[in-house]
Image 1 (cartoon, rainbow, N blue to C red):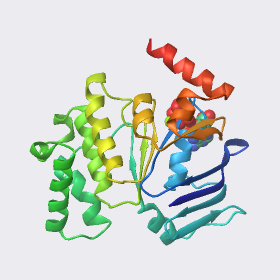
Image 2: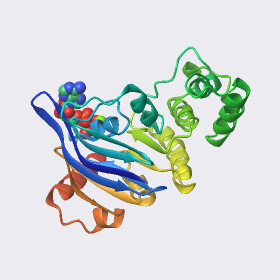
Image 3: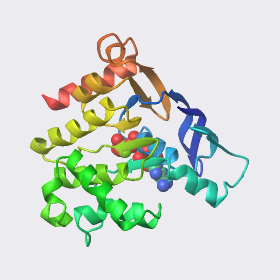
Length: 250
Ligand SMILES: Nc1ncnc2c1ncn2[C@@H]1O[C@H](COP(=O)(O)OP(=O)(O)OP(=O)(O)O)[C@@H](O)[C@H]1O
Ligand SMILES: [Mg+2]
């Protein structure tokens, strides 16, 4: 379980996150939606400590971190915490000089100190899982965006994280490549991976999310199961946002 209590993030005078409270049950998929600039990426980055929150508490499994009062979190605690989270970026961020297989092996060997053979076996299994067994020896520039993103997912999974964080994983892809990536994510959700996904793919949100949260101006303006958000919302800001999305896709 992940528990986020009163999470704030400020950059100087500018407060991006203004007190986020959220509990994520193990095995659940939470989809995060909201307007550009509302704080979605910042929220994800705070969850894996790419950004250090200004205030608040995050509990992940048996690790709890409390931020604020100028308190510094010890480096080893940060590393242990970060290892529990896997991040999948919009822009894939693969190592260009390594094959797909080596990309999925790298963190296992350097961070987790797994023997190379163990890491290679796991990397192959994960590449097979994301439908890329036959592409293991290719370099990123030889792969399509959708294939690169699936390598990115395999790489994140290879670290056995307690939660996978996705920041608009399909928004850089050509439309015909989106489906393959979403299918992999849907499979992971079905298998019980805990996931937090920032996306504009409303069909994915409708069919895969256990919970949808709508972030607006740094707060959760509404949260609930997809039926509530998409069919029954009475929240003016949620309605406006969803109508705008529908308008853009027409
Ligand atoms: N390092 C930073 N320093 C200062 N301000 C920042 C920093 N990172 C983000 N911000 C500001 O925080 C706000 C929220 O940014 P964030 O990237 O979290 O939004 P978002 O909801 O992910 O938007 P988008 O949908 O466009 O990706 C923005 O106004 C942004 O300018
Ligand atoms: Mg963003």
